[in-house]
Length: 288
Image 1 (cartoon, rainbow, N blue to C red):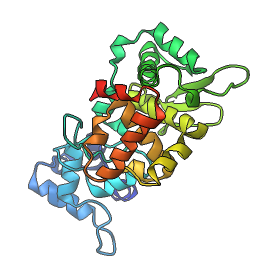
Image 2 (cartoon, rainbow, N blue to C red):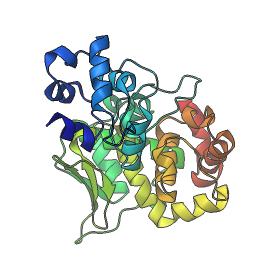
Image 3 (cartoon, helix red, strand yellow):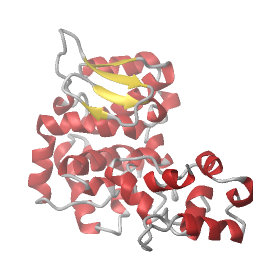
Image 4 (cartoon, rainbow, N blue to C red):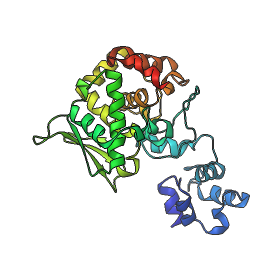
């Protein structure tokens, strides 16, 4: 049971770890526990297939520093959920690993959700021909905060962000429990419940709608195909590159300007949204 659990995935949750090990080795602050974890994470052929004991200990206990490379790589490919090791912003490169939705800075956004009323949020949605289903008031306002910032940057509704009419009605965001991914579909945008209070989660998925309405092509033309390494997930495809950078510009633009992994490409991406894409893109400075 223990070996099969470790073979299938990187364990990054303390409760999962405790279930997998008994109390004597469940405490990863104990050197003996680290050695036990080290033994358990070796492949049958003698090669290591999972993090060593020290890496595993840091990951499980969220001690700090970089997350384990093996877990980051696996989760980044799926846009997955890994605890943040850095919060980002404030004049430093946060070097985000996985999708922006997993970090507090971009999840908070530029406009406090508390400043957006439910009625304001619904009016903003209507102006873009979108709606939201299965949502509580906080989730409605969270989407509203993202749309409000987008319209501030554009000086009004965004033409490339107009939702298509679906069965005679607006294009819906649908909040769903029990799903492990969010994404744009032809007839709706799915948002997983556990990330439904993250502003950037809505902005990212909305970015795919924008991209499919001409945003992808315009971005690629301006940047010449260069990729801004804002997150590992942004490097997985051209579409995710656009959606992650779009999300960063709307919710935490400093992360683009402070980027050190691909500074020229991220500056180019910033310039695209500030000077070419949004009509009032210079208002980005209000969030720096």
